[in-house]
Amino acid sequence: MAPSAPRTRAVAALRMKQITLDNQSRMIRRLRAQLATERRGLATMKKELEDTQKFQAHIHEAEDSMQAQHLIIEALVEEKDSLLQTIQGLQEANNAPAPFDDEWEDEPE
Image 1 (cartoon, rainbow, N blue to C red):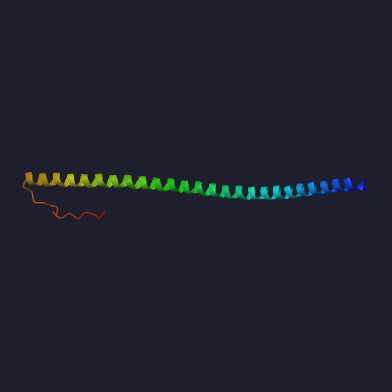
Image 2 (cartoon, one colour):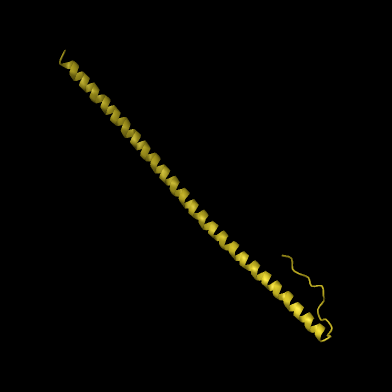
């Protein structure tokens, strides 16, 4: 029986190594699957972030446009006031009756 004992231990050792390798292979497959899932999730998040940054760019463009329109409106109001003063000055200089009502209604901002 002496020769079979080392053989039995060798077979047992090989079997243990095989079990370890099988466990490692399962773990590697599981980790690869998790990695693939994580990559898909990250790709989705990246796309969402890119879409959000694009949306933010549109918001900034709209804000810039609104700011420009506001500046134009302010300039037009100032120009209107200047023209009214010019008209009133001309009327006073010519002693002409005022064709305009003194109470101008400004549009709400």
